[in-house]
Amino acid sequence: MYDWINERLDLDRFKDKYLTKVFPVHPTYFFGEIALFSFVILVLTGIYLLFSYVPSSEIIKVGGKKMPAAYHSILMINAQPLGLMMRYVHHWAAHIMIAAVMLHMARVFFSGSFKKPREINWFIGMILLTLAILAGFTGYSLPFDALSTVATGIGYEIANSVPYIGNAVAKFVFAGKFPAPGSLQRLLMYHVVLLPAIIAAVIGIHMAIMVKQKHTQPYKNKDIAKSGKILGIPLYPQQMSLMMFVFFFVFAVLFFLSAFLPVHNVEYFGPPTLQTPMVKPDWYLLWIFGIIKLIPGTWNIPLSATASISPEVIGGLILPSIIMLIIAIVPFLSYSKESVDYWEPASLRPIGTSLGVSFIVMFIALSVTGYQAELNIPISICRIYTIVLPAIGFFTSYYLIKIKSIKK
Image: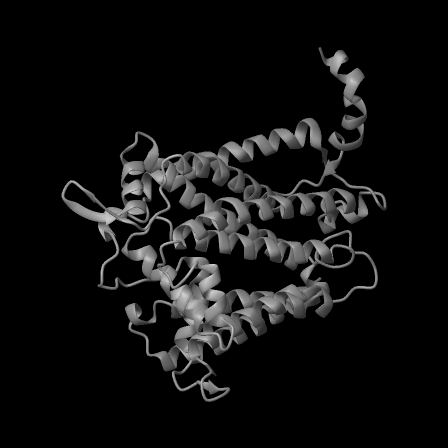
């Protein structure tokens, strides 16, 4: 059978060209694969959920109670033998995918692997992270319970607050003023068709470029591997065996989390009501919520008699966009004339490494600020530690790197 197929498709040539590709051996390389496998699991569980989900905010009467059709369909999914577990696996897979993409980009940054000739893949990584967050946001509204409608409504109001174009853009994206009759259909289309298709295409481009350019290698390989050669294991069968292990490990972890850490209990929150529950965004958006809290309410910039830039727009859109833009142009801020094929030790780029540590500290500080009211921390204190702690992180890491370099 193999000979028959090989004669027609030339499988031996495919094997020699692609399956012998060498992969460096290091645990952090699996962050990218964890993100890929999480996406695959998201698609599979999403297909299962799609069979029973009803994307409609129409009020129906069930057992004497009135509720949106979408909310009732979630209750019906929960009642299925595997329905609730599939919902939880889908939820946790989204979180793990975003976390894996962030960790993958952190590894690329701290190893200097974003430099020439891999700048394009750094930009693609930023696009993939943005798309994953958007997919999480569009999916968050679909249960159409009290929590998800309020959270999605906040996103709508922030977009609607953008001067001049905000109202038109928000109504187009949400098919009217959220929750409009067509909002769920529009958001479902984003969540299950548009964004997954773009994410799959972006991942494909990312992997094609990676195969073309090859991996960067750990710095210790520099004195072992010949110039232009990769020290590692071939894709088939060694790397594929490891990838299979990682896939089943991710699958097992997702089921473990789903069994012992249930999330978003729609029965607890109930269908949408006039009352507004306390809402906090998921961890990957909590830092933006922290920025909004830090912006004084007096920061209202008038543009005309009818338009102004509100504090919500400054904290929810402008400042996060500036931060994301700075991350995106990192390859230009740390330009390299020569190609970087090995990880750069922290001692060779102490400022860049320290800035990375400072950013992580800022991310954590802003996320803590998101819980400022619950932690009973004065907002003035939050403004101070959001500036001071990243500065301490920068100078501490810079000092430690320099001390280590001197000892060597």
